[in-house]
Length: 450
Ligand code: NDP
Image 1: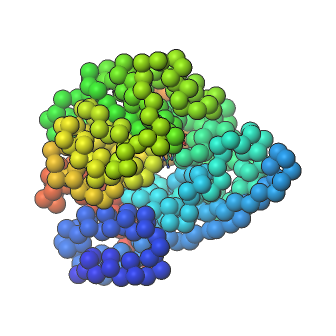
Image 2: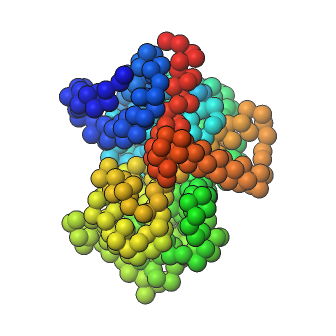
Image 3: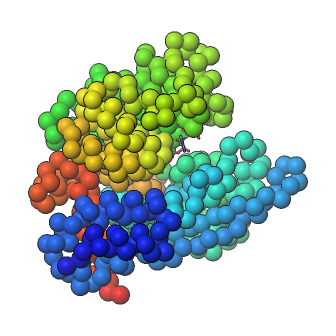
């Protein structure tokens, strides 16, 4: 038998003692897969837990580049290749000052189970740098990307490791990274996903995570016998890739998203967020509060004015709440506010946006809770579709990709719901997602041997 509690205590006292975010993700997975571990001794016999907690390898490298004033800048970068039992390592690159080995270990670990849940042949990895693209010129971003890929290209390949975008890495960065890989290797290969369409990007990839999140939640509402999102007020945090396309899908379904946010503050627009304006703000890379110039009735709250106990965005009464910014953005106070206001469903677009305390509160309440590793898997699923298209030199239409995305999200939702039922935790999608994802990876690890 595996003593999960003992293992968690020893991890907290080990080399991982400074990896707070990674340990948060590990704790959630280990606690929720306990019923599976107790039901079959093979996981213990094959030391699956001990093996899955350590990445296959993790690269840390220096990125040196020159800014527009001729100054030499240095950043730290990483690629974590966590587990490739099911396929090539797959997971995004994040460029944000908060990037560290801890953050990327948490994201890489989560990615293993998320990718397994898609049912597709992809392993788990993650990477990035503490470089902040904000406030940099296009030329500076290009020079950083060139320096970053000069090192990263040694470790990736279409059948080895295929990164994609994440926070701070969009089409512009992917373009520069792809261009650099091509220049160094003279090889035109699908080594990145999320590429612009003109050089092999899949249709619907930018939309995939946001659309997929809403598909998942619609299916969950159906399974749990709740009203769907049509005509419902919804809260969104973030205003980046995931947030924008979650809003777009909500509008397509007749729902009304009334909030969005960024690192400087939040917008509350009772009339519904003007999505075209948000897209324009992102495209022009101007501050989010520019929104107020066009919509005088909308309320802008600066982050400095947030109450210390939580984010005021989650105190607005709504039917659905969709955190789409970053990790740990919903704390226990925010969760209590959502529950008090009778929020029916929380769907996680960002990775691990709810703290452990917030997650426990949702699970103990009537509020449905769609955890990130299942609900935001649409992005990586379409990334795998992009790999398939690149490998076969094909281009699938938007309709084909969108319908495959919807089918995949429905399939994940059904699988998660059924697994939760099977292990006596009906309605607990955290347990369902962790057990279903873990089982698929563990079976492959056992079959492949040590
Ligand atoms: P973007 O860079 O496009 O947008 C990120 C958004 O979150 C921006 O609005 C940003 O605000 C805000 N944000 C980032 N960090 C913070 C912070 N520390 N505090 C407050 N706001 C913050 O990223 P994505 O939309 O791609 O990613 C959002 C989340 O979704 C991440 O957790 C990511 O890991 C996850 N995800 C993304 C996938 C994808 O396909 N892109 C796939 C699966 C998960 P500002 O612009 O002001 O910094």
